[in-house]
Length: 512
Image 1 (cartoon, rainbow, N blue to C red):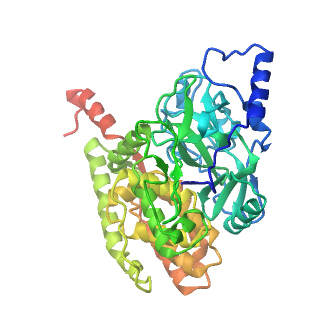
Image 2: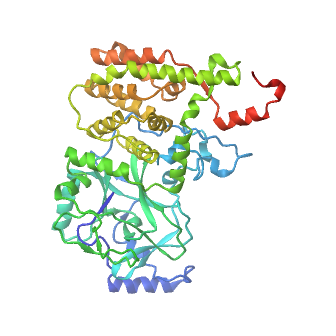
Image 3: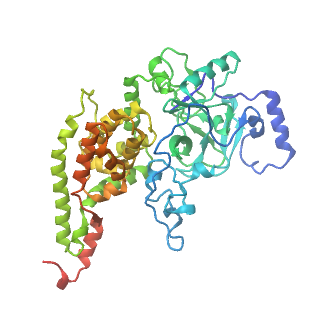
């Protein structure tokens, strides 16, 4: 992520305006007089046009079959369950885990869903204060726990070409302080003239907040979230992760934290060409690959995310622990056979489908596959944000094809990865080359039960392709449908439940 300032990025409070703000503050009782800082919120709001949601300028919107979030699997009974069960912070909500908000029309929790903070603008209580030589700053007016949502970074969403035009115009008009934030996919939020008070959050080398990309209604949204507990009266900060151009003049940093590096952007310098790419300006393949790899390998996931994805990864083999539809009347030992049978069938299918991968003509540049559950989580987050981004999708497909660890691929399936692949297939319904790549990727996934096919709604998208005009597409689709026809439903029974059941079974009823 790159917060891209042209000069200083932070407003300086003019003396007359500061005096005016102090006069306003003394005119009526201040409920926050017990905390330090001069409230300049009203003065700060006068420096730009305040808006409450992003304005998507021409060319900055996308149209995709994957516009809305995939329904999660949460279940909530208000008469029985704790409130967090409704897609809350410590729930098992898949959408929340992959940083996607739920759709109130499709979420099983309906209006009780807690995973709609962007949509409901559930912002923290804050104010803008004079931050000394840093200019304006944002101050918390309440204690904030780790994981709390501070607010969304809002502005006009523009394309990279429009960004270049605006930067030139601002420079010609003598506007010193620009507020650009890259959100990927060749899009930039410009909060210079229209935005919200999130633009006044200062950089820190030891921040208490972090920026996160979330998908809301098919659009990328940028949110500021608490990374460590914040006390009332504390300044809210995040790391701009500003990547300055090689040879450019560094900006002095005044954050004052023990970790302060003295200048902003010292952590990582890239070439001018690569910085342009980070801002969504350049499409060089090497830089695109580097950016994707860097995000996937970044281990900045929350503790809850890390615990959740590792728990899910440890449980992926539970798919094999269950009764098939044909074995519901069988014994516990028979369920083991059902799992083994499914695994054996899957192994045979993997061998049969190696020829499908060979059909991918041309040599790919070797890239490493996924190597950890955390990388799977980051990968799925990128998948959600990449609809209709052809080059990025090609790179993601290549990374999946080079991932040989079946358990990691199963973890991806468990995060509804197959549903995203289906959406991609539908997005490229008129592009034969992309359809072949996506079908090959689907064939590479370790699908061993009918459950996965139905949960991902794969057959409804692939069956019509069996009679497609392109012979390669039709052949791949037909082989997938034939392969899946031999799979069985499995009623999943977690290992723990099975062990507990065996432990409580009376001796006279124990299977032999």
